[in-house]
Amino acid sequence: MASGIDSFVDAVRNVFAHSEDARAQARGIAGELKVLLARPDLMQEIAAKADGRTGRIDLHIDDEFGHPGSGFCLMTSISRPGGRTGGARAHDHGASYVVYGVHKGAIEQTKYTWAYEGDLTAPVLKPGDCFVQNAGEVAFFLPGEIHRTTALGEDAPVVLRLEGQLLDRVSRHTYDLENNDEARLYG
Image: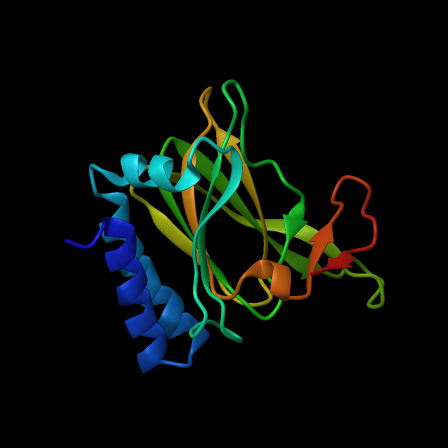
């Protein structure tokens, strides 16, 4: 019998095989991720794949399918005892997208938009929508959207993230909101 992660990967490959539209893909993947998050044995599968490691754990990197190119990635982060995840700088995902699913705990997602305050040549990032994702909830950020993820609560949340393409292969930006500093390009 296939594992929950293997079944999820097969379903995601099917989504990619039937649509080239990023939004349609993200919607289809979000539905499949909800099913995976509900599996009672998911933490055991993650622990087996992590093999005692902490930090970023790539659960699957695909050789054939993805957006904008091949290489979609299912990953999670495992914190050390007492550690936390989230709180990273605001960032985009370049030409790719990411689907976030919370298995345990909660995260806050804050989206940002460019605003002009008088000088049309000096846009600044302003917070827009802000929402909490609790266990079992899924959300996605399409190409070009800027957001920041922050862990909530005392314990580190368990979040699965489907990157439309492994983000190490995609040029993207981070933003220093506190200092209104220039965006840094990486990837």
